[in-house]
Amino acid sequence: MPQPDKIVPLGQLAGIFDQYRKDGKTVVHCHGVFDLVHIGHIRYLQKARGLGDVLVVTITPDRMVNKGPHRPVFEENLRAEALAALDCVDHVSINEWPTACDTLKLLRPHVYVKGAEFRHAKTPELQEEERVAASVGTRVEFIDELTSSSTYLINNYLSPFSEEVDQYLLDFRRAHSAESILAPLDKAAGLKVLVVGEAILDEYCACAMLGQSMKSTSVVGRYLSHQRYLAGAPAVANHLAAFADQVELIAMVGDADTDRQWIGEELCENVTPRFFRRRGAPTIVKRQYQESYFGTTLFEVDTLNQEPLGERDAAELDGLLRERASEFDVVVVADYGHSMLGPSHVETLASGARCLAVAAQANAANVGYHTISKYRRADHFILSEHELRLECRSPAGDLQPMLEKTARRLRARTAVVTSGSRGCLCGNSADEYCRAPALATRVVDRSGAGEACLALTSLASALDMPLTHVGFLSNVAGAEAVAVPGNASFLEKLSFQRHVQSLLK
Image 1: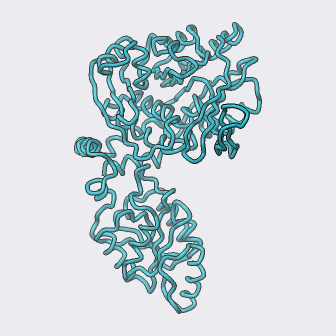
Image 2: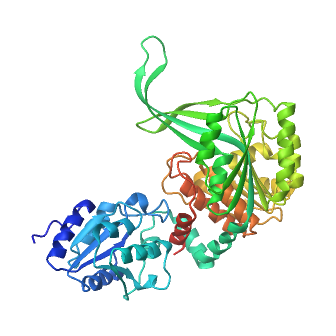
Image 3: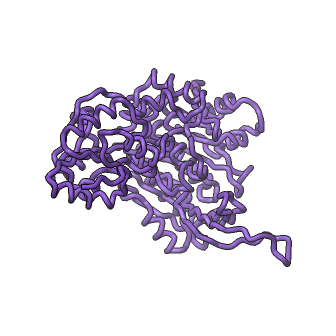
């Protein structure tokens, strides 16, 4: 049959393969990311081609590569072009799914080939691919060949990071393996975690700017679209749910049943909500109006009630916290300073929690009135640099003595101060410190980073992981969070593990 162009849309391959089968030809299929084609790949593909008459290679699309926001280095069309240049490859297609399962069902190749390194270390995806292959009559083969790694080569020769970050990762790899980081984190599955804090809805309204009004000095925009994301304590709970099997949430919501229902639907299955309903108040909504072309925020309008809780509401919340706080291995407090947690509630948490992790956020509604000093105890806390400087009333100067002073007062086992693109400083009440540079290569929106970092560092602290690990995990979580708008997605355990493995290979 006439040979089509090598790079073919996936939908066309099924018809091409039907003709191959009619002609009695054996079709071999390989699948992967192939971010950097190297000699190991070439020999692997040559041997795969030797198992049949036709070799097709499908590649994971950019949006589904789960090795961290810094990958892939080469976008999908370039990766396809590199593979199509090999004589042993007959067809290349960009996959439509994260794994080859649906592709195997569509193409039904005679042979599906993986590298020998997967024979005795099968990933969950490969195990499912094997089940699908058996169901469509495809034989799975493993090929022994020269083993190399695109990730290793990229990390050492094509790194997307700065020289400072490369040196940090090189030193970190020498001292720690991915397994030494991830194995302790696996123990988080057995922790019972309680999250306490305000429920917040982040809304993004995209606008096209039309220009200045003809009747005033105001700027006029045209509404384009609207997105709503979970934020606040429910977002922290969802991040934690990827790693801890049992997560309970005590979140303050308003009177509206529709908001409470929507939040409940957005929570992960293993998050048990106990909504504290504040009478006569709205659920907190933070609505940003953004210029769509540049993606910049023009202004924000918040819907909230900053008045202290009424006596009845305060007593109800205090009773709930007294009942639940001592029942959990770790209590994570996401305190946004919007009048949920008063002095009695803070004291209940400080006296009742076995392990207390706290974030006390400074924002436009509470700046100058709300700092970590409202807590007398925190086994772990995480603050931004701005929040620590507010706490210490120091707009300039070295952060380390400020962290030392705050950690000692709170008797913290671990503490993290984030400084955006400069990474984070970690410390504790024993005057131990370490610095870790930021690992983000793509920043879409920073607003969801706090929740992700609070979740991961709280678990790391509860598991008594070293400060070096706490800082590293905080920056990995932050890199994933800033790569999406708001909390458009939450941390996923497998993706997070692949990210860590990718950085430390």
